[in-house]
Length: 85
Image 1 (cartoon, rainbow, N blue to C red):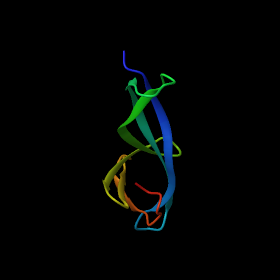
Image 2: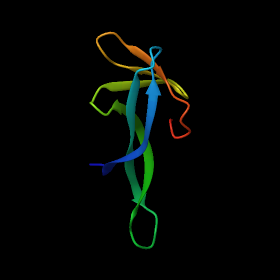
Image 3: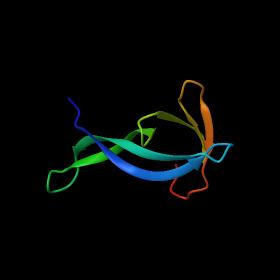
């Protein structure tokens, strides 16, 4: 079984057309490759990125700075935060 870990990589604010703020957290799954250092530590390769609001709603990345919160009716949000993926 491949060793994996999830690493938080970003936390940023995004806003809908009405000005409502959404706090979004980005997590990157990391997948261990073969040991590549003298210490025997694995080389980690980035896997899928997942985005969620702080209250747990899934978020899809449409493009840099544009996202869609997966609610009953999807909500398009935007961010100018430089840390936003």
